[in-house]
Image (cartoon, rainbow, N blue to C red; front, side, top):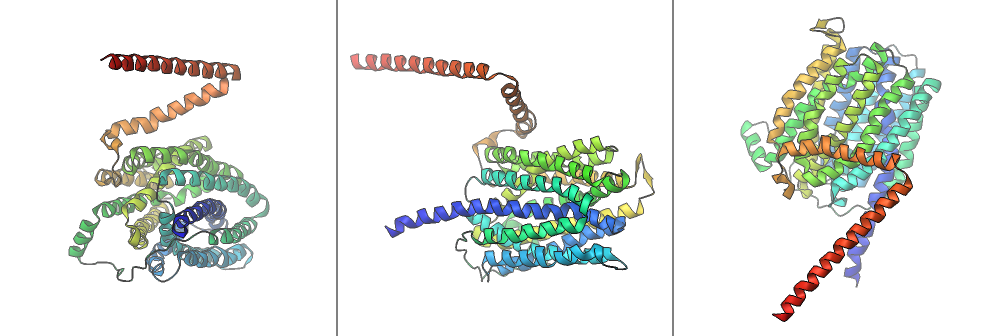
Length: 485
């Protein structure tokens, strides 16, 4: 009896933990959105240059990359929930306090201090990455696309609401108030996460986590897990290209186009809201067609985000680009995480995730440095028809196209029956047929009266009943014929 109740009790714990993860994620998303959205505006308010903006992003990503390896090592000796707790307290509470106080301090170069504290925060928050990925990988074993699609919708909604409110708070009360609210939200998330169930994870003490500097060892590593190696290479190059431009989208809006904080928040919400309503869509398609095909679709179209920024010179144009960006990267971010879980063995997942995040993070670091140098050197220059930051966006677009060439070598992990479908079919279904079908349903159910819809329901039910009656008569005739024989 006890053995029979054990799986039931464990399933109940997992169910409650997954629900708690959604609630915790909503609070953490709100606080993280405040930091990621307004860290660059804060730096600009402190008189940061384009080069310092690039260094701000670089320092954060470099610190986050450096935190991956010790974070993975810690999972061999400490509980994953404890790693997450320490990371949260130090990274999102203790180190946010001096950031909140920066606008009130008389410092010669406050931007430098902002870079230091922001990078330290990123380092401690990165420690939790391998532990969290490993824990969620153990808790979510089936229908990952469906669960993370649902979780991302709720977490994204929290970010959208926070961004909307934060834009007005910053305009009225300043950065200190909104960062203080983010700190409080982080505190509220702590007890929710700590109530989650942590399945027993084998401690892999025999596994020595190190890096190989001999090219022969590289070949051996690739042969052991070629799928993960190729995927890591693609992510590194792609992140390099994206991060060349990403830190300067905010600069372009606030400085070059002189957009206010309120309209700036609306622009951010446009992308976040689109991403929010797209998560479930991409989760459904990932479960249907597999991670690789959706990665190919989103990876190719993600190249056109910097292209859109490059051609934008008005607020309404940026609004459209943010919608496109939110739709594509909702699928991109989700499928990258799903593929990473599929490509890593459970007993060594923290180490593999750390390695992946390390190299992918290097792409972000060098991309931000490169973008900062180009932005600083080209701020008064012209290339073809582009000037200033548009040159950075153009460079990002070209390298993104180059990165997409690696996508063809990324292999599917979970083989599905739908793998026989040609890639062009999946492109057509995901970006044309499925959205058009959904739009048609929305229009039909929005602009048609309740009476018309009820009449259709009755008609459909009667049609189904008639079909069932014909099938029953057919079966009776067959049975009667067999009886005579």
